Image 1: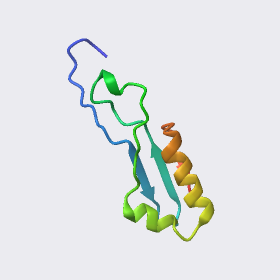
Image 2: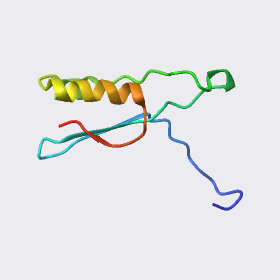
Image 3: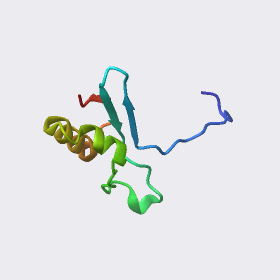
Image 4: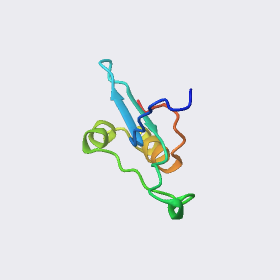
Length: 80
């Protein structure tokens, strides 16, 4: 990227998709820090109600979602 290139930073720590075939994927990133004091601190990410409802009947998917919310690794994970 060249110096002076305009960039847009998107602070969207949770990305989700519910596919037509019923598959549910989630990707959880560490939220951006507001200042240097927050660097290295764990910042919780919460799942929207629609995502919680989509996995509520599947205990394995619910557990995987909770692990993804805690780990915040930024990798796509298939919940179901």
